[in-house]
Length: 535
Image 1 (cartoon, rainbow, N blue to C red):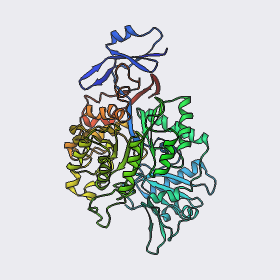
Image 2: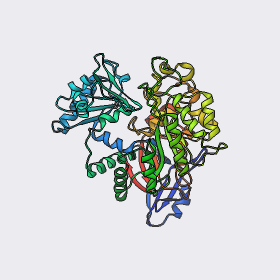
Image 3: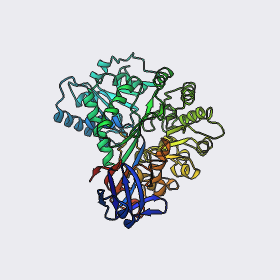
Image 4: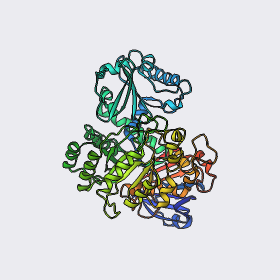
């Protein structure tokens, strides 16, 4: 038997309830209580950890992200936070100098956002990329993952010309001469991403370990991740099995991505469905997309964009196709979650769910990921059908700079309505959509509580009525994320019988001013009663 005692701590149990110490045995919390009581109850060979008065909370559970992509990004060209086209070029050149890829190697990166550029506030084009990496085909994805830019050589390898038809639910941008600009949107992105060669099992495993180590640094002990997709789900599942069998450091709930009935039904026929697996690796919901992103203006709106009346965004699934996939999932006892950002997209998903959810009872816990652009009637529909909201407060850091321009002030005032959803009683969980944003749990909490960007603006917060209090925010990141995966009885609380997944924080987030939350450090991360990270 392995045992761990954490003492001299401020242990968060639930709102208004803190204890001093925790006893864990064989990966399970055995008791929570006073220093004296827990130390007396601990077995003689227990490991003792003196928290020195620091705050201990349940491990953070990221309810939607892409863990495998995090590992790929850490190994590829990292562009998150690049503040100019010139800086993108510098990062590309630095990557080439450091890694010395062979000529002709396909280079890949993600994270640029034209709205952060200070030299030219525009989307990258193929000529930009041609100048950055001569001799290499290169694909650089926008931070949202819904737009990419490919250079001339990458377009050539993919066979994309001015006459290439984009995939349904996608677009290939052309210049005034009818030639590709290098920009591909939504479902068309796959038409050039296909040139990236497959990596070996060893490289896949190493990248996944890299991502899991980053999760531990962020205090994330569980992830709900969309990595298993049509055409590659078996190899991804096997990769996770290999890595988890050796030294698991994060619990994984797979959000499986299928957009058409045939491959999903094949997946189901092999015995996979929500809940299959063990406490470290489990199949979760069917994950679908019905639109794109706000920053790229591909989120599907009910009315044209306020700052571009020529478009309402790009629908990536028809209502009929979505209804059919939700029906199949429901009939097989599978949860569905759907990426929906624009109010037009959210309306489509709610309509699909309203066909299968009866009397406001949602036993399969169908949900919507992102849930960004909403009006009050739409928020009420979440409550009436008990639909889960899997949200990303960190998105406010960027989106508040474009939201009112994109959708107008009236609709902006009822969007990103995290506090309203909570007060309505909607099951609302937190994630980061990493690597779209970093997995940093502290930054996510800060945005939820202050409604400010990471530089502390605007003063007073962006639509401050939607600020959450710190207790609700922590619960959304722990208990409610566990609810989304049917694990609220074993995960998300520091109570007897729950998994021994905890985080030691350097500051007391429950008492410090909200603006200081951003300075909080993750000092240690514990999974299954084992330290997987110490600062």
